[in-house]
Image (cartoon, rainbow, N blue to C red; front, side):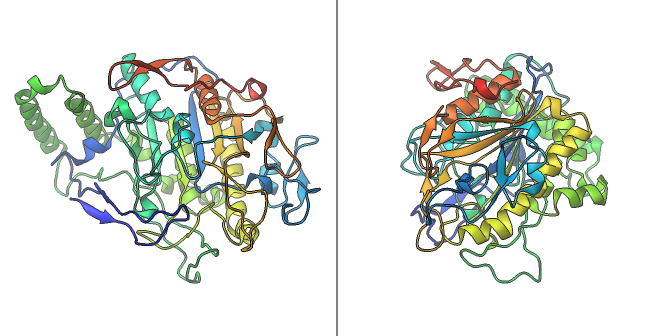
Length: 481
């Protein structure tokens, strides 16, 4: 089934496109839907590195990090944050007053204050790939784009012949990037490696509290909901024996088209069907998504929000062996009109951050770090917080901050990271980098390094030419343990 998702409303980056998307009425191996959405995984032993896995918390829209981790209390009016800095567990390191719980975890984290790129606003391709090139259209993705970090993890595992008990190496939550606007933003895909290396991407039904006021630009609501595995439940009355029989029938069709398996498109079908079968018959992945089995107290600590539920599931997934988990604080005003701008605060920047964004991030991030630490998982899990861009130093006439890629921040914590570290510096107004500039390719190279993946690894592009996964980036040595 194909459905047209979208809205005629104009994005803040000036776009009004609608995109025809494969939404899929998927049934249990009854067609080609579920396997084509999944990236398969045939392999086992992980590369040597301090981090066995990664949880990437992506703040879509461009978080104003000068109001979070790089406050400038001496800056002039019209630039200076309305928020006060507070002390943390690291002497000399301060964060925003509305991040009190995160302040108590900074001994595990490194703050990078000098991220910069020239690839354009709302360009999510560099965030996931390190490939910094301006795009003419940020509302769609192309197979010619380079693969994401998670997709590279999938690719390398298959190439090296390692298995993971039927689990994917790459899970993306709560929905594909751009679904909440009826578009498909570039970045978190297999790109020129092929769709078989795309993430297992969940679906969701976000909603706001029944008593919440009507959403309006500049006054976002809290987004609730839980992610779910796409169409992974067998049809009613479909037993395991019948499922096996259906799989045997599929094998017969595969025999008929074996001569076509030289093409990349068909090459991945067997792997995709195998993973689809595993999702329908194995309990490991389903257990990972079973947040109902967690104590109410822990769920409350994470927050009963879509971001909180996804982050808790992220911990459950890495605990079970999923290597790369993405959790996006997404934007929803296309299919569901809830949270207009996400972190794209063109108006009411300070009230939105104070009342909505910062309390939610503070609660969920600190719960994740403490939960990982309590379970002995933080020493083997890298947690990264970042956006595709930052916000302008000057506050606009709508009490907001606009798009800015010249200087912003990112946060690293856990495995492979030297906690209590500040790297790079911005000028007196958090406008430009003054020390140790960091590119998105450097961030990707750092993540690869922590995973034990050689950041100079090359993968074949569509012509077979070896292409580096780091795109010229180098690990940020100053934050590494």
